[in-house]
Image 1 (spheres, rainbow, N blue to C red):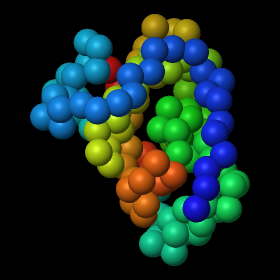
Image 2: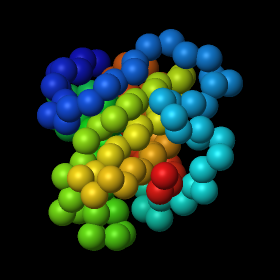
Image 3: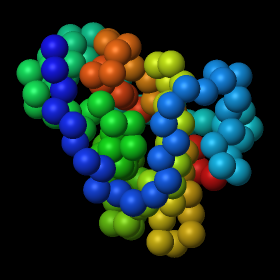
Image 4: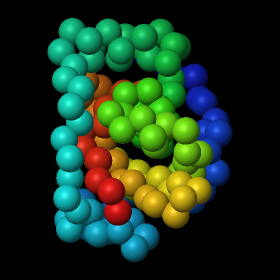
Length: 136
């Protein structure tokens, strides 16, 4: 298995590394106190395994970066299309085990938080999927 590194095009502060899984703060965002909305897209196990296989073969490696998955979700899968045309900036990313939290800000001073998880491979090359999102 291999992964081709992909440089994030979005600017911002990225907080990678070990963390205390009991701490759910990223910057000023308390992830325990958010009104989370479930991602309406339901992937089958077969679809998830296919996406993981693509990454393992060196394709779609953006799926291994939670901030890129969040931006992609916003641009292509998000229900409210008015957010698709607003430039988003990755503010912060926190990874804890197989869960990631991403905060995006927009030019209109609004922010969104995303909770992602690794459904197949929990290692460094595992794909991330948006599980929930919240307006903050």
